[in-house]
Image 1 (cartoon, rainbow, N blue to C red):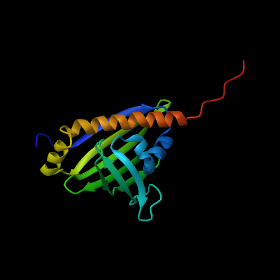
Image 2: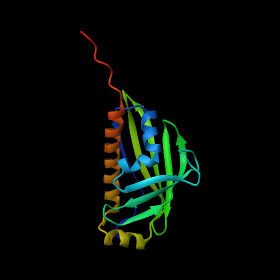
Image 3: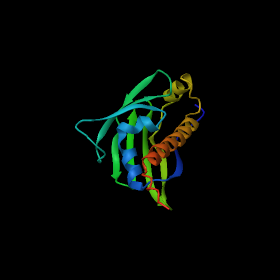
Image 4: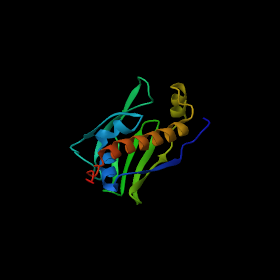
Length: 167
């Protein structure tokens, strides 16, 4: 097997308010703009937004043509503070994805964490290796860094620029 996933965290300060960042991250339909492993997301079972217990359908990829669905559930929806989901997939265990938003200076420290609550099976690791992901921990870490980089781009372009002062 070679590796066991447990948990990892990536963080970044972004020039936007905690509420604005929360609004982007918790709108799961926008997650394909941010995550390199998500192709699409849509709320299901009557859900229309981020509330505890809401479910959505996500289509994931490892970057190639192969995709697969999963149905995460919202565990925490605390506006401007935390957004946490849990996703379970056959063979691939259960992972909780958490985004925390901490005011820092003129911006916000965004802390993205995953924690494995039900381990991946050895079959899952074999499948990942066969499809070119021999180091899943490194891939997930890079994906989190990319997600926060893209979040910064999206959020910072939405921050209104103060009008220029006339001299």
